[in-house]
Image (cartoon, rainbow over all chains, first blue to last red; front, top):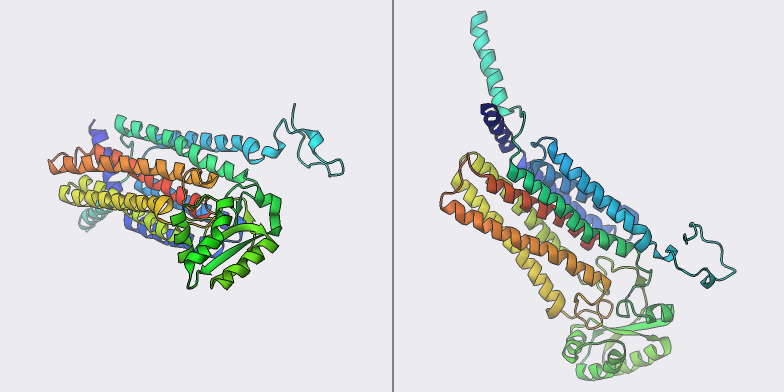
Length: 127
Length: 319
């Protein structure tokens, strides 16, 4: 009990020394960077998306790691976060073939395609 | 001599340990575990919204949005590059005559309220819906004869409204960027409120809690203002909406936008209620250095709401 109290006190002391204002400054800089990145790279799709998503993920990571105190918690937090993120990724990836690539979905009549058009590069729809 | 140095060394190492304490076996309270479990479910909730948005956008046809037709109209593909719209940048000395000349085209292709049409023409943002080039040229000649300044617009299409494209995308990125920063600042004040009560400073905690509440309220207020502008106060070109107002039914983009930001706004509102309860409780002396678990729990929720907005703002507004 006293050991837990001591470690709880040590944990809170560590948290109170966290660099909150430095993190705030980093978030400000990244927000400004995102704004100008989007404004001046509007025409370049891949560079735009890659840059913006990278900056957004860094910002989200800073908020999670320092403000939500993931840095000071035990490994158990990752036991909750990682499966949720994994399932989230799998759900979106699972929808991509049906919704994002719907032209190749099963049920599209092959007779509708012109005879003189080249064969599609994707695999044929499964029956 | 050795005895004189030993205490100095011991005191130096003691000071170092106080400055950077080692953390062993952090406390897992039931409340903290429950809050993290809830946040894991919130990850799935917002994934459903943001993931659906990403997937639907990726699956949108290349000509869903046009500069001179309302969203998802068959004419976008049927007429293609042959479609020409007109931009009236100045209605001239007789705007009522100009409005009367363009009304038949709007009545055929759109659903603008007459008052909104007047507003659109007078403001110099009127985009006359696309027609075949000879018809558009004839109308342009008639409008110029009535004193209007008119330029022809050849159709440009996209799979999804692009940021900063005022012909298809009504969202105000500048205002929302500032609003995003306000929410980030509220997250900073929230964690500082926790740091203050951990140090036993109740007054400091109350000040930071109040600052968090105020900034969260400002964020929500700006969102409500933006909704009002989009849905009612502003009249947008035909490429944004069939009736000039950006409503959930205007397009797939509109529907997604309102679903995502609406649910996020509801989460912010819930957080504000929780923050208000904490502030009122603190005024009655509820929280101390030894007992402040609720501050930490609500803080976790508030930071998560901020984190979600960081991702939402990037995906919906900037990409």
